[in-house]
Length: 356
Image (cartoon, rainbow, N blue to C red; front, side, top):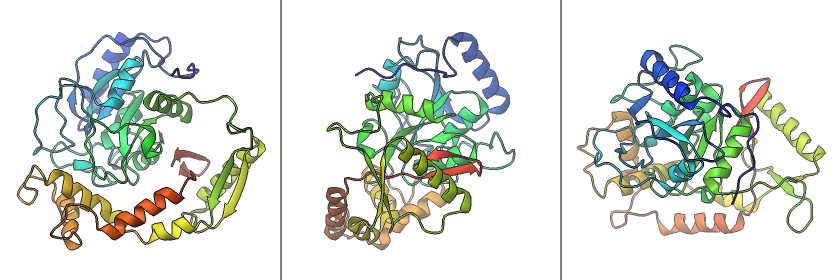
C-alpha cells in the first residue's frame, strides 16, 4: 500500500547530512543518557520518510546492533535482521540515529535507569522525561530526532510525550507488528510513534501499519455514518477539567465532520474491570525473561525487579501463563469489544496533544 503524501513535515527537502551532523552535536553537548548506543550513518532509501531522522527504542532489533531493553544482563549479540517495524520505517526512507535509553524492560512510567543514566527533560531542566520511552521523548524534544519509535503498555509513549510537549500515539495492538521487539506484556504492548505533531504521528503510523488513510472519514465502507462510542462506565471518571473540556471539544469537532457520537454503557467493560490488568506485566514479563535468565540474581534495577516479583504473588506454580479464568475473561472482552474509543490527555490546558 502507499501512504498519504506528506505535507508540512520537518524533514522535507532538507540537507540530511548536515542535519545528521547537527544531531550528533546536540547529543554530544546535551544528550547525556539519551541513547544506549548510536548507529552509523546509512544512505537512506527513497520514500515518504526520506530526510527524516528517527530514534529507536532499545527494545527493537536493528540489524548489526545489540538490543538491551535498557538492561545490562540481556544477551548482547547483534541482531541479524531488523524488527518488522524498523524495516517498515527503513523502506520508507527513514534514517536511524541510535537506540534510545528507557526504563529497564519498559517496566515503569518514570523513565529512570541506573545503568545508562536518566535522561533530563529538555523542556523542564532537572525533571524526568517520563517513561518508559524516556530517551525517545528526549531525542525528539532536543531536536536530535524528528520522531521516535517506541512501545506503549500502559502509557510508555503517551506519558513521556505529555511530559516533553510532544505527541504520542498508542495504536490498536494488531495494527503494527511486534515481531523483533522485546515485550513487557504480550497482552498489552503496542508499537507506535512519538513526534512533534499529530500529523507526523499519523504518517508514521501509516508507514508502520502499511495503511492508507481514506480521504473521507465521515462514512464507513458501506456508506453508513461512522460511529464513535464513548463508554459511560469506563475511563471517564475524575477527569481534570482541562482534559474533560478538551475531550468534549474534540467530540464536537467530530460530530461537525459527520461522525455519529453515541454515549452508552458497555457490558464488556464490566468484565474487563474484573481483570487484574496491571498484574499482566509482572506475570508476562517474568514468564518471558525467566525462560532464559535467573531474574532473582540478575543485575536488574531494584525497582523493576520488585515489580516483576509481584508475579509470584498470584502465579500458579504449575503454569507459566495466566490462569484459565483470566484468559477466558480476556478472550470474552476481545470478542465483545469491536469498538475503538479514544481520549485526549493535555500537556498544557490549552492544547490536548497526547493521543490514546
